Length: 144
Ligand code: DQA
Image (cartoon, rainbow, N blue to C red; front, side, top):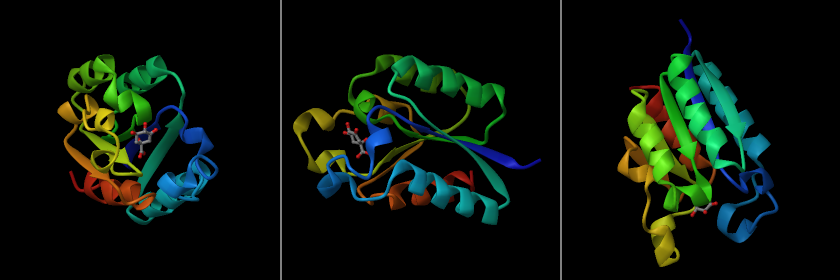
């Protein structure tokens, strides 16, 4: 069976490319999806790539990842990373390993970004490498 990896993106990431490019770079979310698609296909895997500005969608999709038998989830929860106990609970409620991803390095930014609820449940964190953070995370996720 082909390995399935869910890639879930949180609020404001639909604006990548034009959103604070000095922090997040010039790649759009479609560019990132295309890169990951190629990377997954080369490894004989498949990506289900989604974005929502709504916390509940991300929670529903974490549950769905488990129901669909996904091998892993890459999660860039964006601002919800730092606020959402409900997302942490969802990560803990499923057996699928979740990898936390960020384009920027939240630890090198404002203090309110240093706390990560997602990180308390995630298997590993990939941050600070722009779009490459996703590629590094996918590389590892494909090996679990
Ligand atoms: C982000 C970092 C978060 O602190 C921020 O709220 C985002 C994007 C990143 O990918 O660097 O929206 O998750």
